[in-house]
Image (cartoon, rainbow, N blue to C red; front, side, top):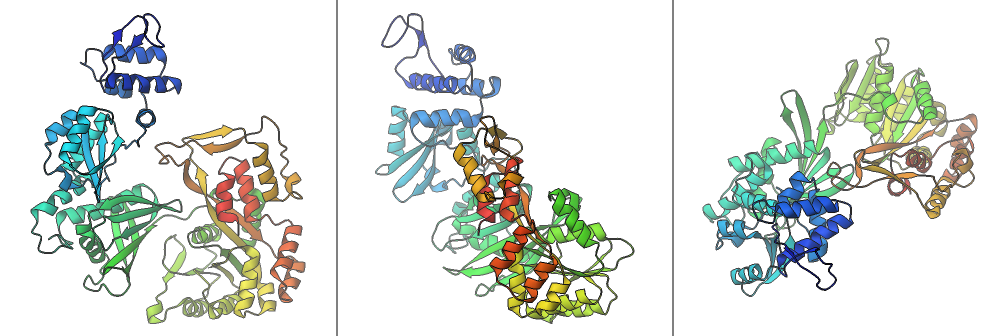
Length: 602
């Protein structure tokens, strides 16, 4: 971005001696600079100094602003987008550039003139340029793509330069961008005998490196799942990641390589690459560093167009967390520690898939894991390991189910038994029986709340008297998005936000919170930054709801009372619901009420 300036006297809306610009692309950039000053991104004196330094063209104004005056890329891009009224496209090495669009274009010319075709969608061409209002450049684009509709995006010159390196496969070796650039060029070098695979198979070095790099990037970003989604037409295969419970599209892979990438993953998981008609599942042990290894649980599913989707669940081999680090309220933590010390009974941790139930159970086991206790666990899969536990991986295909493992444990002198999940009445009955015969049993269940768990077990056919006697506590749990620590800021909420919190918590219980609406009262939110991918959230905070059985509650369980009656009694006895715990953590600045409602409302 270069600027020419003249000092003129007078002029429409101008002052004598003020710095204005000739009616060219320079005037455009002056408006962009004014926008940066208006937004407080750069001071007027710094802006004037930067313009003065770049007058002779020896120093690029864009580089000055970014490097010397520390103007953030996204701020400069946003100012350009506002002025040109088109989207700003920052550099992203995952972008797949259509190699067909570059066939007739000279890369040196594109680099000198600062534009680049990115993608074609039917008769529409997406073009990235540093100046969408440049008429000469616009004519060049139309001559290059006659009869096509051109849609512009604005970008920084250095980003366009990086995109050109990406398009020619000149990025850092091993980066996803460089590998994709290499693959895009191989499309045209390979024989087109197989229109689906493009002549590339799962053993091609670029496919191997691309698959490995996707796994490494997913681990680096803290993803829990990788979704590989091919499409029947020539659309790019999508790679989506689930981070902090939310899926987003991470990158696209050229359609010609969809079979090769899927086959490579199946080879890594020891699956049958020739079988595409039925689901398969397997595991991959992958070393991400010299001293760290992760396990990936692989599931393939046949989809339309004779393709296969692949989902990889990342199971990091991590150590158990201490109970004190799991962000329980002080009252809940003391209650859990107390019931975990009991010699017999049953403790249930409930919630949807991915809500941290297994992590919580292992934290409880870590708390009671001593030489005096013999602890057996049956899990599917074994995600967390710790010394002192004898852990068994269940295998339903050979009839080693949770129920079968429970029967075996009862013959192996246990003190504590942990069952990965109560999936059926048989497992539940054995667990309840074990808890009544002198063993502490821990397990999980997929239910929405603590009270609903009791009703679910009774509906399965479990004996109400036995369960009421055995039950020590039911802990319901959710994971809620946490406000990013890097861009966290306080703000003054409106009265309406305060009233929503009061209504959500319950007006009758709100006085226990002890907060009144005052003009200086503050809540917290995430502004959005690079660390959190501009979402304002990074990581997750747990929400808890603990049901403890009083004598009155046991009587309701034995009488098989309705859910509403049990819930009313639990609330009267002081149980804090998931929503109430979430509101407390909102007030503490860990999350927002909107995120709490998203996971805790039924």
